[in-house]
Length: 174
Image (tube, rainbow, N blue to C red):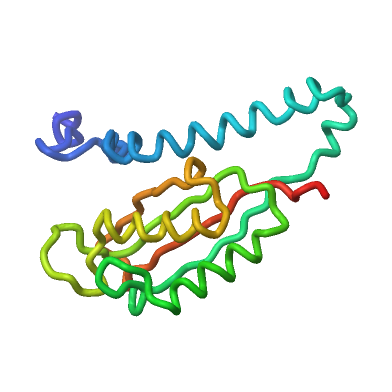
């Protein structure tokens, strides 16, 4: 009888931790290309140094990866499907700041509660044309278009939508 008093009711777990959150396949698949590129760059860098005649000691002194980033608020970022002059100036400043880097990858990550339904044309509407405008602008500033990746971090619980841009690279050799 004492054992039946300790048996949890149906739907209750018997002092066990709640199960882990469900695996989100879409989220992982969206980030997979960007993560694969970053991992490949990190893995191939030591081999490239050895192939160029570098020793393991020289490889240990290899420059560290540096990140230059900016977070742009959605308000005033786009005029239709084009970047505003203020947004272009901010992206230009970030590209100039990253000018001392040998850029390996650039992440463009919309964060916060962007609207993705395709209805309306306000500043919170995120469309492929708007993301392409950001990519095109960075490419015009000298960033290789093959190194620009869009990573989706849309979160409806966040307060304000923002566009995060990150330049990842190593200090350029003169």
